[in-house]
Length: 279
Ligand SMILES: [Zn+2]
Ligand SMILES: [Zn+2]
Image 1 (cartoon, rainbow, N blue to C red):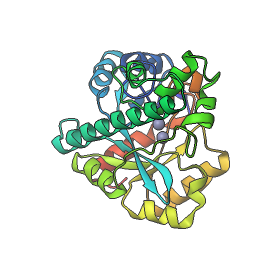
Image 2 (image 1 turned 120 degrees about the vertical axis):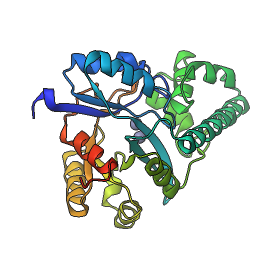
Image 3 (image 1 turned 60 degrees about the vertical axis):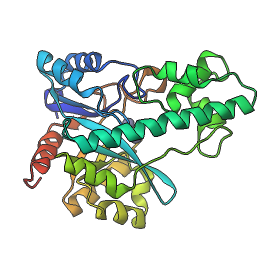
């Protein structure tokens, strides 16, 4: 696979919990020789127009994208929506509602820090999020800046992760709603970074049986074995294989933009599936 034909279909910008602007991401991808990319911010399409404009200027194809969260078997499962229609009013309404839920969650997290006697306020968290949809990584950055934790992961281990002192569950949509709103806008859905969860037969059957169109195979958290299992499931079920770096910012970096090699065939398959042709 040569780098000219490769793409990165999982990147976060400053419009969710990443650090870079969409334009800077597109420039980085162009420098890395990528043919296509998707910015897949959590619960928002706010960075898409800027990415598309930069993509036109720099000759990088942009696949529209959004990353959603769902809960299945008490697990935090992520679903990527690709080729979503940005003008779709139902999708916009759903995203606005999710954003309100995120702000309410940040407020509850701040209250928990207050109860612990630690100086982390809602205003500081929202200021760190800036234009982005607020999430736990923003809280982690406030904690790092104040010296309450030394490292990004420590913030999750000690305070923000599931079961930790300041953990607050996120309001999420049912899996069926995510699939239906993405499809309704003309898009397709992909099970993001399934990881070891792909070994759970019941969960696998539930997610693949719900109508997702693909599975993320190439991801920095995946071992070769997990990627192989994901490819096997995709082949067996006629699903699209996708992948990407899941890049947010350097402190949380597992792979640089374009570092995970993803064939351009993934883009072709997503687009043909979205347009109703078989992948
Ligand atoms: Zn994810
Ligand atoms: Zn992601």
